Image 1 (cartoon, rainbow over the protein chains, first blue to last red):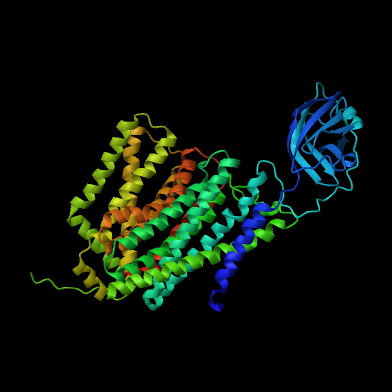
Image 2 (cartoon, chains in turn red, green):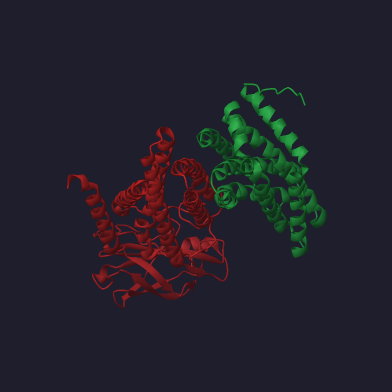
Length: 350
Length: 228
């Protein structure tokens, strides 16, 4: 049993990431507010859709603001809770805006003792007929936004557009990192084969690369499913997706190359050389070129990575173990592939 | 026929020079190979022209590099695949493997530069010349032919070891060469005026860095491939 501790560890971690990653609720958020466009000089009623919200609990302590920058905020004059998910906010909007524009976007902020603070960034647009900045400056209040509440429970961050798909951080990204770790290990085995000419090193490289390819395909699929819900299409001709497809082609070619040799020693040597060469071309493919071009992918082409959204570090508690978990599972599968390859080679010798 | 056989010198640079001269002499003697590849370029350009008829700058740019890509694979494929086993054995006894690889890479770069020039002239002849910054385009062509030559020469050395080498050549080299191809299309789009921006220098140095990295990988790995 002592020998298998890492397999047990890998499985335990993966169960942990699946349960905690899937069952932990998201923070309260605002999915929708209508009407989106308001006019100055009126008392407007906004119907707000909450997500994971409990507006009916302690509803008298609910507060809401329309916020512009850091120095202008208009508190809601009346708050009517319809049910847990819907609340109606009345804002008495002054006659002029404090900006030299006809149209200005505002951020909606709701605070509740139960759910904590939630925002709809830039989601509300206010239009004015004529511009009078001085009057606008005077009319717009700067209501104090203080003593915002924190949701007490263990939650993941809520972000518009992403909403529940933020959980993909625990599957797509770690699968991808595990793939890179395992492919690196495969490359190291190929180097060791060239160095020592031990046929078992080549089998190890083959097994690890096999699993790396599998993890890469899974990473591509999980990414494409995520893209369907956030970008709108499975395949958006994004540079990250294209480069990934090419990387998988390179490793596909590795197995075609392996298949085209009769002589086992020649096969091992040539495929070890190609594996190292392919790995070297993988780095510009996955990590340099996507950074140069525009990309929709988080963490590339000027988009922020999800890590920066994880303000209270709850995501890291699942994300980091997930990398270890997928890597360990990958090594386990590689070990099985390796053992079957050893048996096959021994059969060939008999 | 009492010609004295002169043994190649032992210095690696002299060996490279010697091999390069041998490649050029051989090519000159059997002109069918090089005229074949030049004809390949011309007919591809013509086929492309009669299929498209109106070729705008953007299409011109892509077509140029796609024609270059396929012509390069065909031109470089023979470098190791068509060497006979006996000659390989002969080289193995006499020469340093790095000299063999480098001489082939340099020779293929020159060949591809010639091919690129021909493709450019032919494509400009039938479809007009959209290039605005000639210096930039020439630099892209130079870095491109070097990058193609490095990748394809090395992959050809790998494919030559296998049994069905011509299929393998395309399967192995196309995915590896795509980063270079993308950078090239991007760079020449700058020189045609399709893209504007100040990061041309960055892309040139990145392309040079990728080329250098591939040469380094080739030089490190080739001696292992060579030893049979």
